[in-house]
Length: 411
Image (cartoon, rainbow, N blue to C red):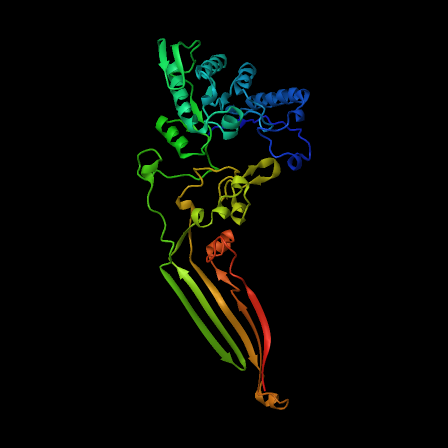
């Protein structure tokens, strides 16, 4: 196992009331909140921290690319890589990375990465993220419908420019170059190791598997299985999972007991042999915070790791890392979301006591009964226990509980 010290380089001095006055830290954050003098200090502090991580023996120093935000002050992580290439000696420079579909022409990435690899003595790890919508679509104006196609073409051009021994022409759909002749070429041959940061889409996982790359999607995500054993996870691994959503058995039973003036009656109802797909049966309760949604009980088991705050659920997490945007890897049909719909419910229970007739006759009564009853007081269900979801009404109001007490008189 190897460890990378990863730095986002955030702007740490936003006003205390930022979350109340501004809608986002990304894309349209007001520019007057940035102080270049503070930024100068932060850049140098952050580089000092990365250099210290190298001295402490970390295997990698990680930086990445984001635009127009206070979340990460690195529109060009390659500049940080260049600074670290001269000031560090041992750790790999993990540039995660360049959003290669944004570069015109993409050989600019190939050139700068080759420079970093040579400057660092062959310590570069090249990251090729597809990029977030905030960076690629909003900040750089790329068309979402063609972004992935541009990404694939840029990838092919960069790899060929690193590995092709002779000058060549490239006639792609988005990039056309009469001469591709990379100087310098990378020190690591045939090229530096490639990581694909992110795991938010099946297409990215397919791309990683097809090219035998490493990916940034990790222990905070749902892991999909290679069911057919062909060495990759794709649509050919889709199979039937779970039972029918309709129970194989519905049942009810009751009992009445009378003793020494007391009477107890109960009526039970239940179902068995049903499976519930939480993604389709209760999407609002399961896709926590997505599209600024609410957080429900299921989110308590979310993967989280904030050691400075004493938070670490990596070993006990029962839910992926929380995100405010959709994640097609996590939020797709899988056995992770299939839960048992079995339940047993006390539909009604009543306890009563009848006073003796000898006593009642003295006061002119034929019968007096004191009772207390409850409707839906207890339900045994893993859905209710683990996720606070009523097994009979997953997305609506739960079955109401009611409690009553009274006296029945007969004259």
